[in-house]
Image 1 (cartoon, rainbow, N blue to C red):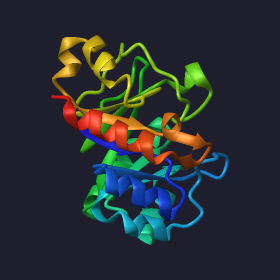
Image 2: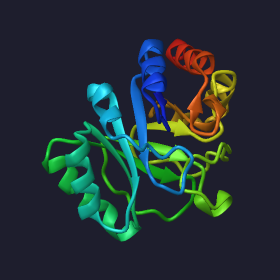
Image 3: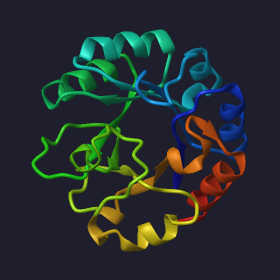
Image 4: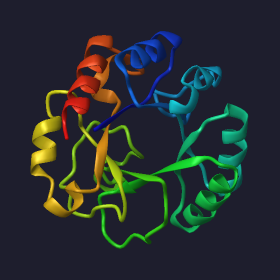
Length: 202
């Protein structure tokens, strides 16, 4: 299984995630969050494993920032009315899309390269990064990473609890807040354990 380490804010944390063998590294552009990445130059350190995570109201700012950062992957938090257009524009430029998929009903089946099945903002009041799990009731329509309250110690149990249908589409896990020594600062030992346990799972 893949391991995505999200919310990286420093060169030291990027190095720790790369050394641990993380498959994807997330860099958040959202000033309200303690995981906001002030230095977009860090994105280039991760190469084709970099995921630009951003919150926007329309597709155009997403595209502009993806170009500036040079990210291979983009994880856009957008209004439902803008999701399909943003995905199309990003893919037209050769970028891959990790589309957030909150665990809630009645979502339009927007195409993506990969989905992030995460806790609904209706439950947490936050767009991702809540550190809270979810019931795994409303699965994405394609292959996905599971997010929400994860660290290395719980991955096996969460995978075992997943309904059989979605489990066949699970490609890995995403973690951020549970891998930290302080908000926005990763603990290398927790990162290493998370990545190792994710890679050990089938």
